Length: 120
Length: 110
Image (cartoon, rainbow over all chains, first blue to last red; front, side):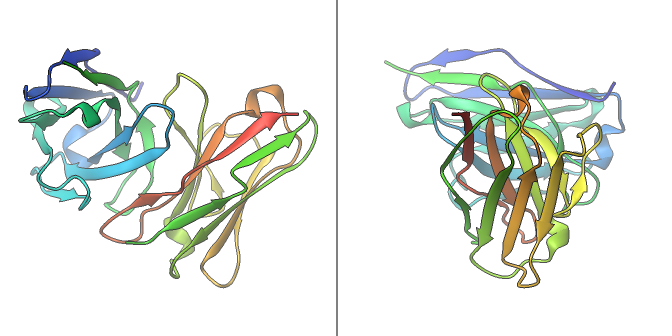
């Protein structure tokens, strides 16, 4: 079964760092792009960007450029989303999703989401 | 950035009725790069339609996607609403180097 499994919910204080993960299985992980999507409480989906699992090539949305970092460890089929200094406004559900085939394809497989809560 | 505007914001319908959801892009896109997703409360989104009109694996044929010749207007039609279809629907373009989602249409039970 093709799936993406994300790490569990996190609670942090403002200014702290955080890395969440997304592990793929059931397919050739290095052959696909992985995307990250933010969903703030009660709001819609926001495309954060994509990272190629084969070589870590990245595309960031301007809204998130410089605010987060994408990375990949293809040896363990895992993509990461990282913050160096969290803000309260980073409180949201974060989804990873697999790009179906080439770089310009839809997200065909989604992780279950990781809830990040930032509160003092 | 390409902006996607979905309408209406909320659609109140009864089971068995037809739902028509609209997605307009701020500039022309190739229909190959337009998709639709369904999201139910507490769940991750699910791909319904890709390439404007192709159903994803396992999606029932009551879901139909289409696009106008303008390359800016796209429609998702649910022919007869089933109870499990009440959810929020998002369109997405993946044509440019920066992808974007529409703001969503909620289909609720009337």
